[in-house]
Length: 284
Image (cartoon, rainbow, N blue to C red; front, side):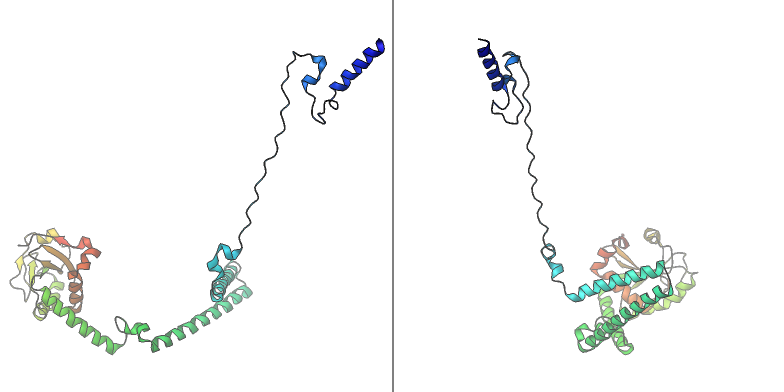
């Protein structure tokens, strides 16, 4: 009887062991412990979380795929960048440590760069000589003295004709003072300009004085204050029926300066470029 009881207890111990329950290396479950009874409660052991797989990093594209333009660059540009960097490096070394060897090394490289630039300038000059559309001396204002005379004469003729057309509905307002020596010096030029280019000059005296050639000058009636004339002689281009007034210049001006400035002030683009210079006043 005692032997049977011992066999039963031994079987219970074996069945309640982890190996007998088939759990392997897992921790024993509470329901396998018969000695705790059926009313015992215990939280289950949390299962270990499996590590999340790390996505592989994308392989870096080759240099040619990242910047195809750089891969297709001419070797001359690569050499130029390398030369610039070398010049900067040698200059920096020579400045920070101005020994004879460092300064000489920088100056030798700089001399090579200057010689290369001089060669380029010579080739560019020869190309310009043989290609008229690329010659800067043939575009715009000439540099040759004789050609410059022809250019200025032609330009003056064109401007004179445009000012004669302008004189149909425009006048020049000439503000002066009778005690101003610069006004006396400028008056003959302005009088000759009026007769040569066909635009009328209306002289306005700020102090009631007179000038030779402008005996019929009118006394200022407030126009000078409205235009804020602070210096004389002063010349304005005015269009009486619209009241548009544009300053031409102050001080003694030459005939060529008057031609150039009047032509520029009458152009439609002038007001767009300098809107603050254009005024609208009621003209008598």
